[in-house]
Length: 250
Image 1 (tube, rainbow, N blue to C red):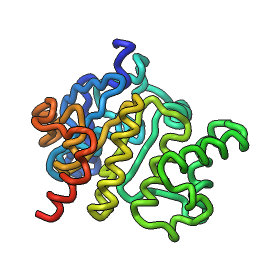
Image 2: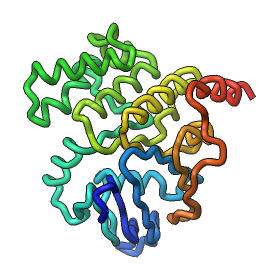
Image 3: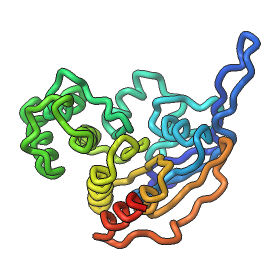
Image 4: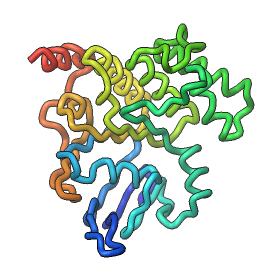
C-alpha cells in the first residue's frame, strides 16, 4: 500500500448474526476504500446503509469479517485487541454525535485523559489541553463539567480530546447530529480549520450541508459504495455559516 494513504480497505465485509438460527445481516459487502493524507472525506447514505459500520472498522472499533485493512501502509485487521488499543490511542482521533465525555471530569480533564493514557507527562498533557482549549475558543470553560456546557461547547471539547495525541486520522460520526444550526455551523468551521492544518478527516453524515465542506463525497447503499466523487458545489472559505443558516431556515 502507498505510504501516502493514511487508511485503506480492500474488499471489506461485515456480517452480524447468523448463529442459533438467526438470519445473518450483511452490513458491509466488499467495500474498497482509500483515503490519502490531508483529505476531508464525507460518507453519506440512508440509515442502515453501513456508513457507521465502515467508520468503526476504519477506526478499529469493529472488526471486518472479510477483507484487509491498512493504516499508513501497515496491515492492521489482524492485530490483537491490545495492539489496536495502542494504535487507536496514538494514531486515531474519534468524535461522536453524543460527545461521549466523562461526566465527572472537567473539560480540561477530558482532553488530558487520552494524553495521560498514552504516557505523556501530566505537565505536557495539561499544556496540550490548554492550547487546544484556546484554539477552539473555549479556554474559559476549562474547569467546567460536561453537564455545565452547551452542546456546541461539548462537541468542541470532544474535538480537542480527539486531537490531543496529534493523530494521523480523525474520524467523526455525525459530528453535528445533536447540535442546533448555530452550534453546527461553529463545529463545521472548526473542522474546516483543522483540515486546513493538514489533518486527514473522515466524516459520516446524513446531512448534505455537512458533506458540502468535504473534498470528496462517498455515497453508500446496502453495504456498498455506489459513488465516490468530489462534491458538485464545495463551499468557498468563509461561506459555511451563511449556507448552513440559510438551509436551516428553509
